[in-house]
Length: 125
Image (cartoon, rainbow, N blue to C red; front, side, top):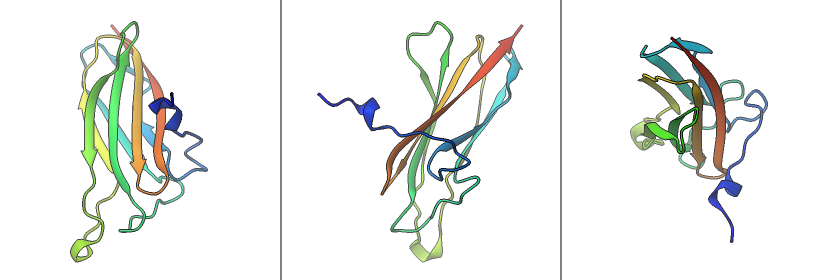
């Protein structure tokens, strides 16, 4: 049986335009608001046309010791040229955490499929 996880692709976002780029602090204080920015195509611009575009970005956080990640954000990009309006695959969200953990970002390109990336964050008292 094929697993969904086997369909996700990854790589170095500096050389691959589909990998989600996660900008978040390395450390944060317990209970402090943490700002996370995720975008696609930071170093190499991703096409943003009706024919080739990013459909969505989802962001998760999995605290250390947590069995499952928690979805902290989800954005659908639905304007791909109607009346010459194009949405850009860029998301900003904020969350609070009590424990260190991993931020995961996933995205979907209508031509090149599913992509993922992750970043560790340390939560201090």
